[in-house]
Structures are given as C-alpha cells and as structure tokens.
Length: 266
Image 1 (spheres, rainbow, N blue to C red):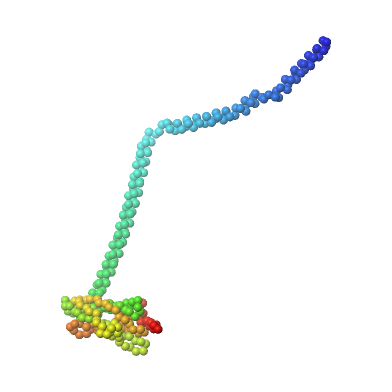
Image 2: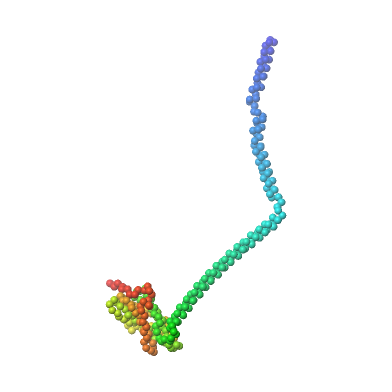
C-alpha cells in the first residue's frame, strides 16, 4: 500500500511539472503588448510637440522686437510710392495736352494752307484781269468753262466777264454762246437758239463794274464734235464783242469730245 501511494504521488508530481510548461503558449507576452499599444500614444505626443513648436514660432514672430526705424521706413516708402504715382499722373496729363495741342496746330496749319491757296488763286485771277503789264482792257470774256451733266448732251457753262477800261462804270448787257462743230464731213456753226433749243432764246444777262461770273446750260445735238466755243457779249450801249476758245481748253480732260449718239426710241 505504501508502495502504491508513492507511485500516485510520483504521477501527480509529473503531471504538475508538465502543466506549467504548456501555459505560457496561451498567454500573450506582457512586453509585446506594451510595445504594440504604445505607437498611437507616441504619434499623439509628437503632434502635440509639433503644434507647441509652431505656436511658439508664431508668437515669437508676432512679439519679437522690430527694428527701431521700421515704421519710419514704411512711411518713407509709402510717401515715395505716392510721389511716383503723382508723377505718372502728371506725365500722362501732359502727354494728353501735348497731343491735343499738336492736333489743334495741325488743323490750324491746314486751314492756313487752304487760305494761302485761295489767296494765290485770287492773285492769279486778278493778274489775268489786269493782264501781265497792267494794261487796261475793255469788255471781254476772260475765262470760260464747261462741265458735262448726267445727260451726255447737256453741258453747264461758267463765264468770267471782265472790263478794266471804264473803271467804276457799270457795264450791262447779255451773253450768248455759239459753237463751231463738225459732223465728220464739214464745219458748221450752231447759234444760241440751237444750243438752247428755243427760238429767240434770251441771252444770259450781266451787270458789273470790274468782273462778274455768269452761268447757264446748253444742249449739244447728237453726233457732232465741238471744235470751238464763241462767247458773244452784247452791251446795252456799245458794239458786239466776241471771244473764242478751243473746245479742249474749256472742258475737263476726261470729258467726251463728241456728243453721244443716243439710240432712237421706236
């Protein structure tokens, strides 16, 4: 019996000895658990330290002592900027004024050039009136110009009449034109009545002391070629005066030399 009890004690002891060796595999390691659970805390700690660092840097930037003349420098810079802006505004205004003055000057010069050209034309006209030597002359058609109208047979004329012989005295009368034309075979003369297409057509009246411009219209027959224009001046008291002009000298260079032959209406 004693031997049996000893064997039981030996079996129990052997069981007890094997049991503790199996227990550590089921429990987690305390050291490993602490390390795994400490990572989030460490990150939080780092974030707190970073925030404290940034806050301290910002506070230092805000409350750190500034140079003693910083405000004066800012005021001086602001004053300099304002002065430069005013200078730019003044220069822009000056440029606008200069441009406007230049435009006005150009307009004035153009007007003066036009006036000078008009005066030169007047001088040339009066020189033609008195002649190159200033010799006095009687009644004359000094100049004659004809312009074609929309109707190729209709022409408008302007005659400049002068007289320097009897200065201060009124010279009155009437002007009539005549044309020397050719139809390709022979020359013939068209009188005032034919050119006006009216029997006993009255002349263009004039009345002046020194010069006068008179105007009117004439109609050229179809298919004729004008060669010469005769201005006939009939004073109220005096003899008939005739002045002739070549057709090419009284019409524009682009004007047709022959009256157009219009198609017959049928």
